[in-house]
Structure formats: structure tokens, C-alpha cells
Length: 224
Picture 1 (cartoon, rainbow, N blue to C red):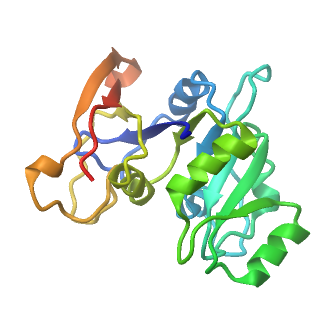
Picture 2 (picture 1 turned 60 degrees about the vertical axis):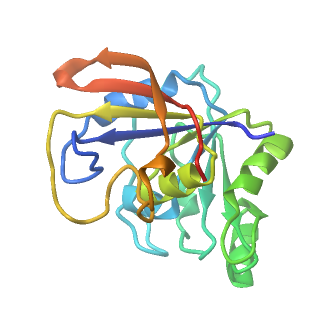
């Protein structure tokens, strides 16, 4: 059985994820209310959060969290073995543990590194991580019934195109960014027909401070 998967991003009016200032405190205040069992974060997003390259460690911004909450498991697909700053990641105050998703193409040296660092990992997939199987195993092995995706458009795109998303939530910021780079909430190959688009149903809309709008959608049908 698959866990409930919620994509969550702060976006500009034109769907961009970068080149605008977002209210990080508000973002995580809302996220903490969902009380999910796990957070799925892309490896590039994690490195960017630390302003780090592979093997490099920098600080992470701290956010106020209710210490009575049950913190989620942080799940990171890293088939290429990019991240070696797990000692710093463990210092994040709002997670309880880390699970790295690897594939059979992941270098054995990297998995040895994870073992030596006492970081849990699972090998799921061949050339890359099979996210559908990984979600099933998260439910079976770790009791993950709900999961928030805190990542960029590429990981969002893989999940959406593989019928793995139940809800899409956004903090819509009153700003237009523009540009031609693909850094948007949903990055995937172009569709062949409009019939392949994913329909959503609005289930909540709330006007927050600084004219930021919270939107919560249910995924109504899958086309792929």
C-alpha cells in the first residue's frame, strides 16, 4: 500500500521556485501542522539548502518547531552518491532520522560510506531509484502512512508522471519571475496532448499574510 503523498512548494504566480523571496517561517509553520510520517527531499535540493557541493558542509537555517510534535523521517534519493554531509543533516532540528534511497547503480564505495556513517539506506531500482517501490517499502518497513515532498520540480515531475501524488499544496506568492530555465514546480517532458494533463480539485484556499495565498488541491485523475 502506498502512503499519502503531498507535494508542497512555495511558488511565484507563474510557478517558479527561485528568484523571489519566500517566507520560510510561514512555509514550515504550515508544513508542521500536517504531522506527516516522512519528508521526501531531492539530493540537489538538500545540497542547495546547505549551499554545499558534494563532500562540502555548511550551515542550515533553523526554524521554530513544537518539540511535542513527532518529527518525520527524512528520505533522500541519492542514487549517484552525491551527499556526504549527513553529519550536518542530522543536526536539522525537525527530523528524527535519515533514510537514503540508492539503486543498483550506486557505487559500492558510497554505500560503504553510509554504513560507516550509521546512515540507513535501501537499494530500490536498477539504474535509478524506483520511487513507487520505495514508497511501498516505506509503508511496510517504516510505517510511513503520509509523506510530504519538499523538493524541486524534477522530483515532483517524476512523482506526478508515475501516478504517485495525492495532493498538491502551494504557497502562492504575489510576484512574477519569468525566465526560460525549467526551475518550476513541475518539470517533465512536454505532453503530446492536452488529455494527458492531470486534473486537480481545489479543497482549500486561504489568504495569509503579505498577500500570500495557500492553495490545496486533490489529484483527481492520472493519465500515465
